[in-house]
Length: 431
Image (tube, rainbow, N blue to C red; front, side, top):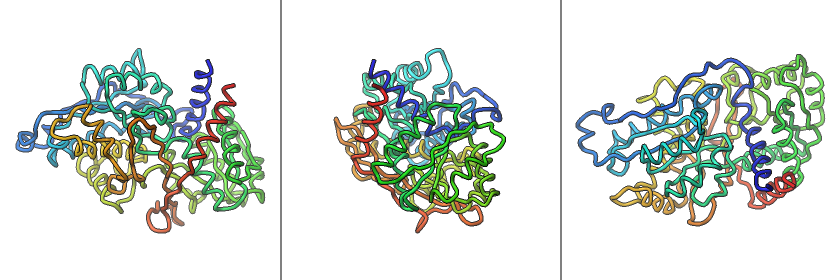
């Protein structure tokens, strides 16, 4: 019973972390992505296809359709671009790659049913996990039972981080909390957190922010809840004035813009800490956001400063050009690419026979690998859960341009004791 309560608390916190990426109402038309699986050989030409060896299948699971489409709907195309790139360059350690994706929001048995399809029908050798629901806690044991390594590609997932057979490429929700407070502390001793009252998860997140803030010596004197459909946020804005040096909030994207604009119109411009997972096009055009700091769990998706970033942007230009500059050109899609690149790196360590077992062994041979500058250094140790302690920052420039590199980008790394604080909070909430 206590375990289920604990999972519920974790789930609530995770919902808060990803809230701003997906509006509560309206706007995005639902469409079906129940099966997105194509052979890549036809795209890269017969001569290259004949040069490759046997085919290996790679799977991915995520929430790609419906209200999630505005942020992650193009992820299957990004993964297909990765497979096309691999095949054009000689395959996955000489093997032709075939990509399969499953939408966890569909079907009679969401999550677990999709995993069974990937494992038993598609015979994948690895699974990329972008399932933002709590369902991954139900299907991870099934993947482990069948010796299929799971590559975790989302900052919102805590449950996989405690699994010894999950291989994350980005930090989890605990890291997001630390990033917000660590950067806030660098701006001053007082921080404000505002949240929507429609979801209890937001209030739970606020309590966690306060708990971690106390541990870091960062005061949170302002913690305000408000309706996402309120006509006026004057009181919320006035609470910021003169009391804090930075702030952050969790509302639907359109409400965040409304609140920010109203505060600035009242002459209240407090540095706001934004999450890359909720990056919105209006950040580039609304001057109320200019100069704000963005917190990311991977190297900025839009930049081409490192070999890994250049490879990603070049692959999109060649195989998925419609994504470039679109609303789905986001940090969520680059996380999927990062996960796929981790599979490629592990395959180089796996030997001539590429199987689930050899790929898993190859993953444990990964040491301090940034995948060409896409991630923080990755190291995996057998029989030990992996916690990635570092995240990136970047800025919205004075005229709305996204700026990375140099003074605008650095790693923010959390101490191990952060886990103790968060676990204590969750255990207390679970009773």
